[in-house]
Image (tube, rainbow, N blue to C red; front, side, top):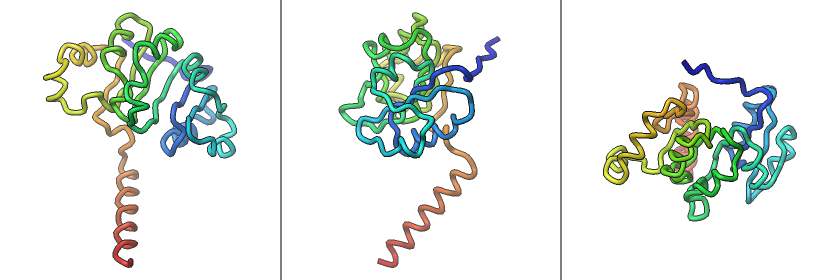
Amino acid sequence: MNRGWEVAGRTVGIVGMGHTGCAFARKLQGMGVRVLGHDKYTRSWTTELPWVECVDARTVQAQADILSLHLPLSEETRHYVNARYLAGCQPGVVIINTSRGQCIHTADLVAALEEGRVGGACLDVFELEKPDSQQQSDPITYQRLFEMEQVVLSPHIAGWTTESLERIAEVLLERIRFWKEK
């Protein structure tokens, strides 16, 4: 039986310090973790989140025990986490991806999990989002991923709560009102 382990005393690396990356960093405050943050394009978050160490991409990669991705999908971020990237991570690193599935090369992640170089993964998104495309393109890799005990999967709903749905509805209503008044 896997009971997990405490995050206190660990280093959490956040790649992408936009809205969701910063929100995740706020949740970590007071949990007894060292938080590393990296964003290639902005450092505006550094004054708002003084407990987060602003570091380069290589430092996050090399020092994080838990690595959380909060990246948009672009040619620059497609397969950001691949075999080469994972080789530069801490042994046993846990990878969290709630951003875009294609930011991780799935076959490389599965291989690293099987070899024990990656200790676990929490995936809210998949490289191939639709189950049909997973079965058609690489069914064996996805079957191996789905069977792993050290992997937690969710269908891109990690942040969905009753309150978040209410906020989404409120924002949508405000936008409709704004455009109607224009």
